[in-house]
Length: 329
Image (tube, rainbow, N blue to C red; front, top):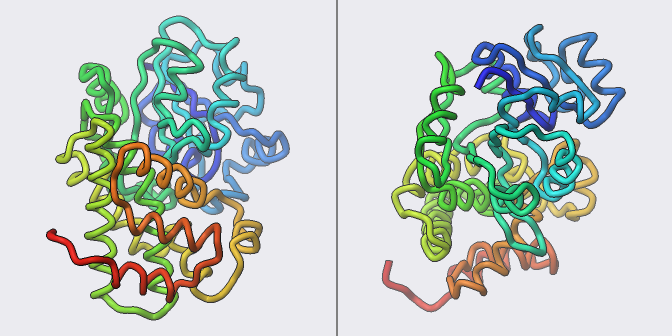
C-alpha cells in the first residue's frame, strides 16, 4: 500500500490524514463540501471540524470523488454511518481492481442493522475489508499524541498488512481477525457514553460511573458474542479501551449529548447545535433491534433509547435500572 485515499473530512478523517501522511507516498483527503475543500487547500486547516492542527503538505485535498480515488491502493472511509452506503454507491464506478478498503466509521446502519464492513461488502461485493477502531479522540491524534488502535479483518494477513502500513512512532496498530467484536465494541460504546454524560450532567459521582461502564461493557460483550464476536476483543482496545475513553473524556460528542439531556435540553436542539455527528443517537435504535434479534438483555441501551426517543427523564432511567430484578453477575 503506497497510495491512500481518505474519504470523509470530518474531525476523524482530517486527524487520520495528519497521522498517516508520513506512512504513504501519496495521501488524498476527499472533502464533501467544495467550499471547505478550497479553504483547506489554501490554509491547510479544517476550520469547521478540526480547527488548529495543520494538514501536511503531502495530503492532497480534493472535493471530486473520482479524482480522490484515481489510482489509489487503499481507501479509508471515515463517513457517518447513515451516509456510508450512499458514498460507496457513488464510489463504485471509480474503484480500481485490487483496491483494498478500511472502515474507520464507528456506527451501525439503521434499517438493515448492518455493520459498516457488511455495508461495504453489499455494495462492492467480495473485496478486502478491514475495520479500524479503538480509543482515539481526533484532536489528540491530530496533535500526534500516542494512540493505539486495532485493525480487524476476517483475513488475518490483510489485518496485519493494514497494521504494518498504518503504524508509526505515535500511532500503534494491533491486528485482529474479529471484525464483529471490533465493530460492535466501537459502535455501542457511543450509546453507553450518552448514559455517562447523563450521569455527569446530573452531578453523580464515581460509583455510578464505574457501575455504568462495567455493566455497559457486559451488555456490549453479550451482544458481540451472540453475533459471533470474541469475548477477548471486548476486553481490548475496541471494547474496554474505547468505552472508558468515550465515557470519561471531555472531547466525547456522545457524552456531551448525555450531559445536555441531563440539563433539560431537547434532543433536536442538541443535535442542531452540533457541527459533528454523535453516532450513539442513531446507533441506539439499531442496538435495541439487535438485542431483540439475538435475545440479549441490554437494559442500559434500552433506557438510552427510551430517553432519546420517548422523553423518559434521566431520573426515571436510573430508577428503572436500579430496580430491575436482581441478577447473578
